Amino acid sequence: MSRKVRAEVDLAAIRYNYDLARRQAPAAQAAAIVKANGYGHGAVQVASALEPDVPAFGVACIEEALELRDAGIEKPIMLLEGCFDADELEQVDSLNFWPAVHSEHQLQALESATFKNRFPVFLKIDSGMHRLGFQPAEVASVVARLQALSCVAEVILMTHFARSDEPQEGATRHQLEAFASITGAEGLAACLSNSAAVMAWPDAHRNWLRPGMMLYGATPFLEPNAVADQLQPAMTLTTEVIALRDVEPGEAVGYGGTFVCERPTRIATIAMGYGDGYPRHAKNGTPVVIHGQRAAVAGRVSMDMMTIDVTDIPGVEIGDRVELFGKQLPVSEVAVWCDTIPYTMVTCLTPRVPRYYSE
Ligand SMILES: *Cc1c(COP(=O)(O)O)cnc(C)c1O
Image (cartoon, rainbow, N blue to C red; front, side, top):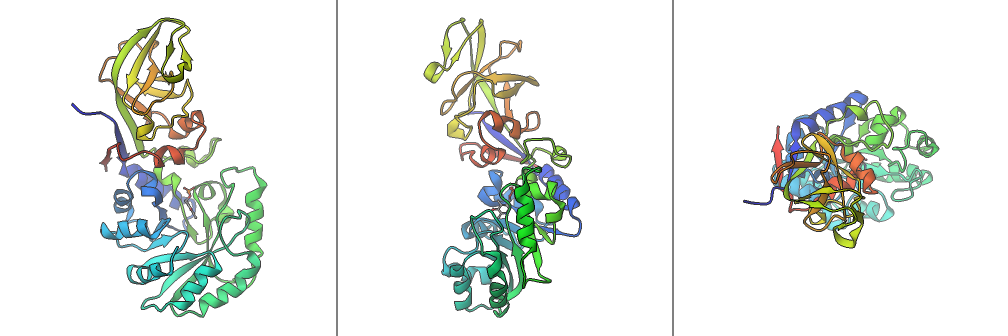
């Protein structure tokens, strides 16, 4: 017997979701974002499944890019934050990584190095998020400096949205206007859209897309969205019931006694906790699915276990499978109960959760 926690990853769903992203902007190319271990789904497995379809991948740092190369992935890999140290440029050159350049520091490193190959450079512009990038007024001179370098095959303008997941919000419109006002960059390709912009901001599509979360089948929106509602959940997180008991009204369940039974309550203990990456912040009432029906978290999530109220679900037995999120229960819905977003739900799963893959 072993602990029965498992995360099943449906690679066909990821391919479907990638295709859905691409169909939103047929004229654009879409780099598949597989940073943070493919949002917890396994970067190598996800990249291997998508490689025949994608022009490039995107990751956060060179360590993630090297992991993909070591596993035999051959397509170009964007470094979304560029190089953190000048000595990474040698690998950019030899391994076909495509760097972002977001600062004078990175630009000078590129100007000081020598290269054997040519590669596209993503010039990161701060159009209003104020996290990374050159100011719009600096762009003309940075473009000129990049174009003067023999290693730069193409300059692609890049920016990132702070609030594209809020379709009614003016901030994205302002960022688009700031981007459009850039002079001295006429005729250059542009790369703007994260998942939310792929689905909600057609004006942002331009030449290159950078979908991440949507590939894994979770919506970044709190409201319904015609495209996001077609996504197929890629990960299903399940475990088993390991204990059952009847608890009297007035008795409390779990650490801190935060759930007090209001009726004779059947409590199922399941093998899942924050040591697996399931959020400790899950409130009482957070849904799970057992026997195809919803049951509710009752009591605090502990490190290795959680307790759920199965009073209204007859016939629950030890060994029954419980879905925490996935095909029957959207991760974005569970995230709301945990005061978080689907991104953290999947990215924070720990190595204690074995991933199983299906095509
Ligand atoms: C993570 C990231 C993305 C992908 O964002 P999603 O919301 O997951 O689609 C795109 N661009 C940059 C710069 C990122 O860091």
